[in-house]
Amino acid sequence: MKKNSREKSLKNYLVLALLVYLVAGLLLIKYYRYQINPDGISYISIAQKYLNGDFSNALNGYWGPLLSWLLVPFLHLTSDSLLAAKLLTLLTGLVTIIALRALSYRFEMTESIRTVILFSAVPVVLTFAFSDITPDLLLTCILLFYFTVIFGVNYAESTNKDILCGVLGGLAYLSKSFAFPFFIVHFSIMNALVYYRSQTKQARKRVVRNFLTGTVAFALISGLWIGLISNKYGRLTFGVSGKTTYKAYAGPDAPRSGVRLGFLRPSNETAVSAWEDPSFLEYPPYNPLESWSNFVHQLKVVGGNIHKTAGIFMVFSLLSIVTGIAYLLFWLRRFNIAKMPAEVLYPTVTIILFVGGYSMVLVEARYIWVLFILLMLMGGYVLARLFQNNFFTKTRRVILLVIFFLSFAVPASHGLRNYAHRGKWVYNLGQALKNVIPAKSKTVSNSNWAGALFLSYHLDCKYYGTQKKNISKIELKRQLAKYNIDYYLFWGGAAADLGFLSNYEEITGGRIPGLRIYGLKNRR
Image 1 (cartoon, rainbow, N blue to C red):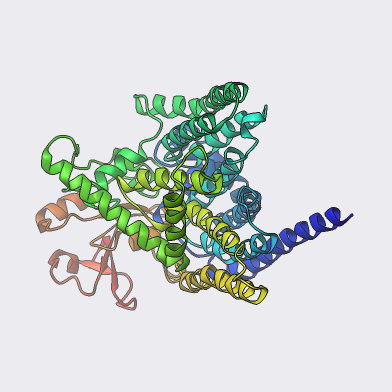
Image 2 (cartoon, rainbow, N blue to C red):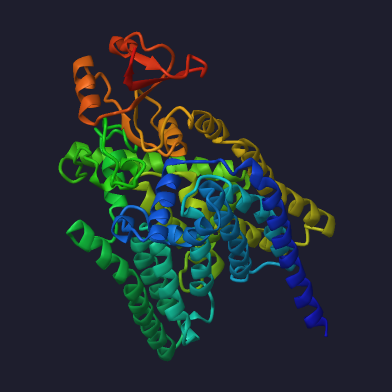
């Protein structure tokens, strides 16, 4: 009877946390519904292609398809694409909290700690949901369920956990191509660890069987998508985002930006810009093994990204360093893989692999959201170990739990405040210019690639990008004529240095601070 009452209480806490999250999300969504980012535009545009049956152009090796697939029914229900995307990410966050709760049972801790983590996650996941439109929250959600399975003590004894791991790995890959190499390496190492830590020959045989079955399930799901995109690009590939991003950011001569290569045609006839498929962009070639200087440069890139990752963890929570030091002490105290607690061994391996993959190229906070959740659970495990000491009385435990909650909730709340109303100005500007700039017009800009892309998206225009740096006036005029550009967006005041623009009508009348728009088909 007592056990049933306890289980009911735990379910009530989960339901309460989900209700708090959902109610808060629905109340706050009005402050974030206009948020827009370049990647989000691509995912929305691809989803609209699926909705319209344009499957050939929807196939894309740069952006994972799962987010766009899930977005299709939301776009069917509302014409407001940005609102549709936010509703999807909000619901994804809801499932993420459920996944976090499930994974928390792979870490030894008291129910009071587990409940504090649950409610600490509410503002954290809200921050994820209301930031950029990306598949990173979706990937986080799927990987949390995968970790729940693979971290389980009964993984080697189960007859279906292997298939579930493969399916979740496949879905993670369909969310983001980074998950393809990550799952292969992580799943292999985790099975090797379970094999090594198994006590009987029979258990080891089951681990081998689980590994093979899970790999087959993963291969079946990922193989279908690999076949489709490989056929499109004419070569075998599991995704082109890694290679493209590597050339754009890692090399010594890389532009270190998405699209700053001059005027470019949109990727296809229904794309907003060339950013819908950046794999066709031409970046300087780079091979870190080609020369000693390239190798040294690559080491600097890795070192810089690891340093950046540490800073990102600190911004997420000041307790990050405390948790990291505690786990280091766990390892120093008992450097024995066979006897190391699973709560220490498995998360450590996961973080090293995840950070190691991204540190080769580029690290952003959203890339490692799943590690933020792991960090919270690792912190809960550290608290549980501390609470075993008689020094921590009930009062001291409560104080530590409050500090623990605030260490995650306060930075997340600060992030929510900073994200509020992002993108609203460009949305309002787009609405004001719709009667002036016809849909499907071709636009370019002198700078501010992202801002010009957002404005073009709201105007339903085709954005051909930003002019090359130090381009001559003669070459610029030739490029504008080549692409038959309709409107030139000039950011940063007057365009006196481009004298030929004075021959065209400035359609805003100087009423938009910092932006002048010239109609290149309208001579004075």
